[in-house]
Image (cartoon, rainbow, N blue to C red):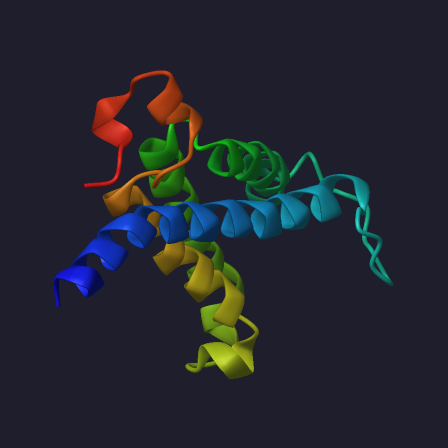
Length: 140
């Protein structure tokens, strides 16, 4: 039993870092696609900077994704991104139906709750918050 506890204590912060980094990379991809169509998608609409909601989403996803990958300002950034995904879900997906899988909002819901988890747990074993000594952002 002691070996399992030791294994868990060793790997839990590392896996949290992996979850944070992979989530940040996927989120960064979403932001870059909105801003510059990278990676390229068919039927990509030009980015609408004039509209408040889409005008904020691309830069927020790009910058937020980078900060999450780096583990910098992890908790406040994850909190903001979780909120962004909740707003995105209720504005763009929920009006289309009750079930996230059917209304196209499953990814928004997943991002929302993963970012909420990261907000509560911190950056994990690897992150600039730890290197820069932001102890309040470190995983418990």
